[in-house]
Amino acid sequence: MKKVPYANVMGCLMYAMCSWQQRIMFEKQKENARVLGYVDADYAGDLDNKRSTSGYVFTCAGGPISWKTLLQPITALSTTEAEYIALAEAGKEAICLMAW
Image (cartoon, rainbow, N blue to C red):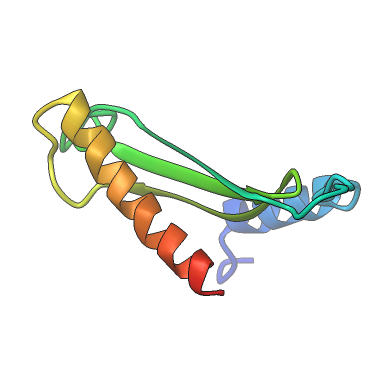
């Protein structure tokens, strides 16, 4: 066990234990399924570097199809700027999803 990190092994076991009943559910829709996107950011949530965190999720028929959370590469000067940075990341993903 010296070569295997204990925390990583326990994390993998916990994930396997909890995820077998978890599913992505899609709603039955009469019309064409729409892709919806949600995006948000916090402001200076990283206490060490004062960087913000961006996150987005895109859904289709009620189920997630694309999601991401990341620490922003630059330090935002305001909450508005943090939201714009998050929106730009989500916009790039939206363009990729539209090309699908």
